[in-house]
Structure formats: structure tokens, C-alpha cells
Image 1: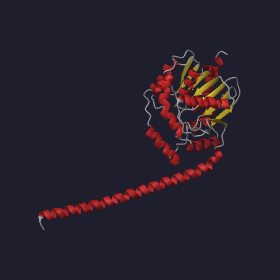
Image 2: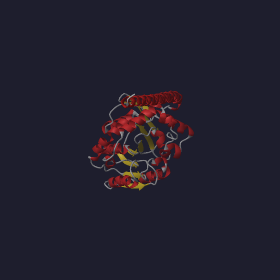
Image 3: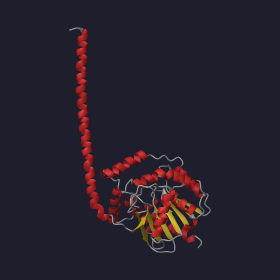
Length: 336
């Protein structure tokens, strides 16, 4: 056999070995993929079964009103000559229970209202655009349908600070005070980068039920540090597994930069404003940057006060007693 033939034979045999190895690798990859898909299917089936079992925990804690053909949840508690409207931050799956540790310390003195936007809590999930006007009009309509009249003391957390400021800009007669619970201001969103791909992956994981196998993920700050009862904690978790990264929430996040720009282009509303500010943990900004946004904004408010708190973003789950006393003092000192 010539050297040329030997080289050809050797090359052919090497190619055969490579092909065999490639086939083995392909088989292993297919097996891994099948196991992965079977695992996902099993997780999803288990998730659906548990969702059905948890239906008994999802009886609305407040009332449902019809807004734009869908149901919105509103919770009302307490009495008083001022009405405090709590407004949740983006992605807070159960606003009523998230705020409970704080508003339960205030309901002896004030009328407490928690509005759960579409996609949150006991409200319907709807696939609609989330412009600042759309969100605000949903909230105002829900309050009107529930017979809750202003003027209101708005108490927004995080992203809903943009809605509260816009409310005061558009309808100043309806807003008596703004009490910010680590609320966002427009400047914070100028360079804010939104990773919608990651949010969609989170949504997919939640729908499949992967959130159920991630240890501790359902343990919100309200559960870990607040005053919820054991039953309320179970309700919170049941809502979490159903209302994490909803379509409505994602639509809201995708519109936040434009919504913030609209508020930024308007005048700073001159209503009394008390802002509680965290140490930045959990906001996506460092402490100096986050607090800088708040302090720069409040400087333009004639009757404004800022209180820094050394705790993470969900301040009302950590410092609810301190915040409650400061709210009472601020509202008491206001002229009638």
C-alpha cells in the first residue's frame, strides 16, 4: 500500500472515530434536553396543582370594582378626617399585605386605602398599555367607583412615586399631601437601563413554576420583617406564585422611562411632601446616588421634609413604627 493510500486510510479512520464521538455527544445532549423538558413539565404540572389548591387563600381582602371592563381590588380600613392612599411599587405582588405592617399602625387615626393596580394582588391581569395617564385614570376611577372621595394623602412606594407626582401635577385639588416611601423621582430614570429580556425570562420562570423550587424567593420583606400573621403569610405566598412578573407589570416597567420624562417636564408639584429614603439597598442605585435624587427633588418643594433611614428599599416592612410616628407628626403639624 502506498504512503498516499495509508494517509487516506488513516484520515478515514480518524473521521470515523470523530463521527462516533460526535454521535455519542449528540445522544447525551438529546438525553439531557429530554430530561430537562420532562423536568420542566413535571414542575409545571405540580405548579398548576398547587395553584388550584391555593385558590381558597385568594379570596379578595377588600372589594372589587369594575374599571375598563376588568376588576380592580381596593382595600379600606379605619376612620379619620384624612384618607391615606397607599400605592405600591413595581412588581410588589401583594400591595395590601405588603403595606399592612405600616397601615395597621395608622388606621386608628386615618382612613386607609390600598389600591391594587391591574396585574397586582387581587386585581385582574390585563395586557394594556401603561402610560402614566392610563395608570392614573385607572386608580382615580377605582376610587370613584368605591365611593372614596378626596382630597387624598398619597403614600407611594418606589416606582409609583412617578404616578403620585403626576397626580399632584394634573389634579392638585385631589392631592393634600405626598408621603414618599422610598419613592422614585423622575431624575432616577434618566439613565435607567431596563433589561426586558431578563424580565421576560423571569415571567416564563414564574409561569412554569420554577419560582416554587428556588429557596426563599417567596419570602418577601413583609413576610420576614413585618407583622403579618401566619395566615397572611400563606396568602402572600399564594399571590406571589400567581402574580409574579405579570404581563401588566412588564408593560408598566417598559413604559416607566417615558412616564418619568413626562413628569420631569412638568413643574414640581407644590403640595406638602414628606419623603422617607432608604440606604439604597434593593433599588439598583448606590446609597449616595439614590439619596441624591430624593434630596435634589425635595429642595424644590416649599413644604418638604426628607428623613433618611438606614434600611433597604421596602422601608415600610422594616421601620414601620418609626415611619408611622413621623407620618402622624407631619400630618398633625399641617394647617387645617
